[in-house]
Image 1 (tube, rainbow, N blue to C red):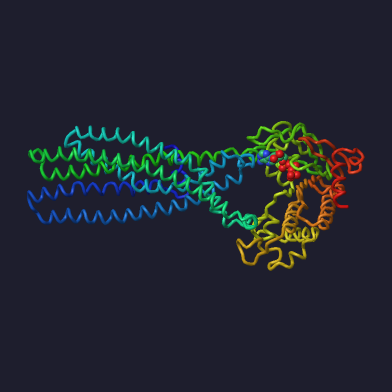
Image 2 (image 1 turned 30 degrees about the vertical axis):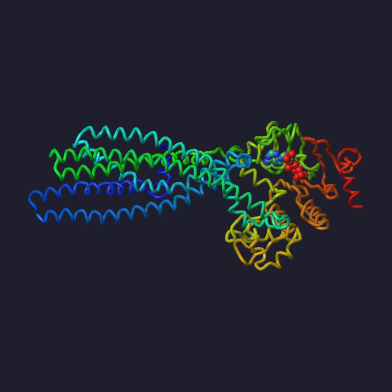
Length: 586
Ligand SMILES: Nc1ncnc2c1ncn2[C@@H]1O[C@H](COP(=O)(O)OP(=O)(O)OP(=O)(O)O)[C@@H](O)[C@H]1O
């Protein structure tokens, strides 16, 4: 129950005294049914004894008034709990998203962590079950205990029936629990797939390929297969649960019938009065119901407890590289980068992508990194961005191992543009400044406008409905623009310029641009980054030749380094690649 208690503490933090309020209301709800147990006995005794109408009316009235209050308290409890749970679910989901954003790519890339996240999501929505439990369990326990005492006063052997019922049902509950956990285990990958198909129809990134390659059938068939699998798992789960709870009910009814036979025998042989018979009978029914309810909910609670464990474990995941590093004070009058004997393989992969790679980028130097597809260029960028840690060796910024640098401080020093960059469906200005519109000040606007001019996108911006405050894509606004690939790339470059990091990293920054714009932007970027430490990756060797130095990556390591002229004279891989491209443009 550790995680359920933890959940209560979380809810208490959001809604103070939640647990106390729930307990009090539940105690009242548990006490009222006791009147239903005793009232018939009192009325029968009165009818057979003094026959005072006022007394009978008083007891009847008391039952009615209590029932009225029970309904009201029940409603209050249901409303309170459901409102509080709605709010709590939002907070818990937000925490989950926040955590997943803070996880380093190294972690969030792994299937295990993604499954954990799925299960954690599931646990939050399963809390509705818990809500049901909260409304029932405490009141059922109170009613159950009281009824048990009444029955024990009839005959202590009744306790044997209860013990018997408990042991039989305990085994069944274990089975329900195992069924529940198995269902939960199988569910995470299914929910992930479910989410994919749910979002698929509204994800415009797939539209073109689906249409042109007529992939509708493929997707629908895949979805159908997956749906069949989901239905099969759920049917198996619900069928088993139905059988188990059915068996539990049979045993409960058997206990009721056997006790009833015993009580009828006692009544017939005048060992108990009719009034006491009704008292015992009501107690029996109430108690068996309470035991069943508690046992059934118990299985659900055990399963929720283990689901919540995944939730809290997920929140406790070490944030890896983002957590590490406390060096904040760095002299940035110079920025020098060095890869020192770095070897790297992706987590869960056996193959090294880089082996014993060493190179330096001097302060103010512009280095172009070139190489064939899959040579490891983007991996070098990912390592420089601390998305992954080198398997061996180290990367230094001004002789400080980057893993020791506080990540937020480090990210202020970097100005990267990724090959697969993403712009948010927010306003252009919000994208460029990573700030809400209201928080962008005059200075920041001026810097942004300057970058638009430099990158030659200012005229395009002016043409948009709300200028630089126009929304990208129609997701949040009708007054929006869908940028072309090249415009998107220019916006991403503006973002990196406005960020003003001391170390520029550009992974294929001009791949979506037409050759003229590419040459123009490349020269501009070189001009902007002149005197700033920079690393460019590009397949267009006609552009990279302008860099101060070119390093060539092949077969998991750096094979050449030097100026364009040096490398051409070297007659190595670079010369071959350059010649091939030059021939193509002839
Ligand atoms: N997340 C990942 N997990 C496992 N292997 C990966 C991952 N990302 C890339 N790789 C592998 O690492 C190798 C280097 O990939 P990388 O993207 O760094 O090459 P690249 O030189 O940038 O290629 P390109 O010029 O095509 O962009 C490739 O073999 C690729 O399959």
